Length: 381
Image (cartoon, rainbow, N blue to C red; front, side):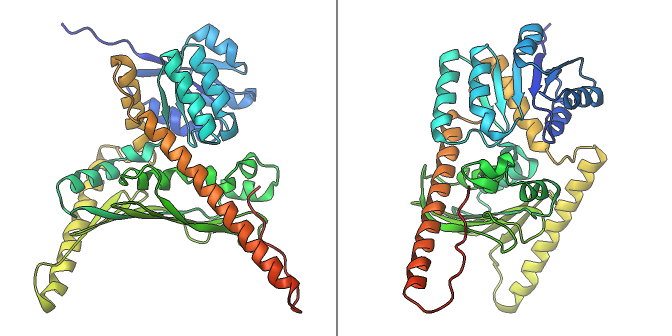
């Protein structure tokens, strides 16, 4: 009889909003059990433990590690704390899952990954949408050759500033998000960015673009960046002016795939094979069949209670835990973790340079003109 692998003991550090997603998805995984939660605010730790039936609560990290000896710790604290906490936990013998963004910058990322190698422990970043059922379906269709060679990836994130979290950030100039090197964008663009890099061969493609500010705010709220690589190009749009949405379109030589993470659909737009007016019938028919497939798939998943907003997180955690138990490579290679972090640094540096250049040009223009001066658009804090 095959011996059953013991469950991993998992602890969670930081019981804010995103902690619920982690706790709910880990609860669906048979190979792991959450044994403790920790937060400097006792009431946050207590309510998380009560709602998810977790036996131990702590306000002191060292005490939690000493008493429950978790195999894995999930870090769901603000981004500026990730690097130091991860390194500390690695040195204490824990494997670590870090909520995105991985670290503040590539310097911290390199430190964390070096510490993991030195401690012989694994670290995973929360790039969970790479393991969403729709993204994995998209990958399968690409491998089947349905759209040919990928040439361009377009990733869109709609993030209304009036939303629950966005409103908190906008109302508080001292909010920790406002103090990140990339401001509002750094806490969120990991997702649309790694959906591009997942299909782009170039480690560090060329960048074009900038960030902008809505007139009602004193920090950048809009971001548009284009990427140019050797074989693929990409574009990333972050907008607070559009409804919430997480959409990526992959353009190939023979067609296009559109992944809508909120609708949980993959739409295939292929090139028409019939001539002339017949194509106007062929393409709508293909769209109809694709819609029927998406509806049927979602109905089946709904009947199995298998539609979850963070479905990709469950799969990523499962694969991370399996890699720990088997000693195999982690689901997201360290190189890819560092690659995305470094590219985020380049995006923010590029936007700051563009903003400074624009501000200087405007200032010089105003100083040589009789026109009324205007306020410069502030750069990201």
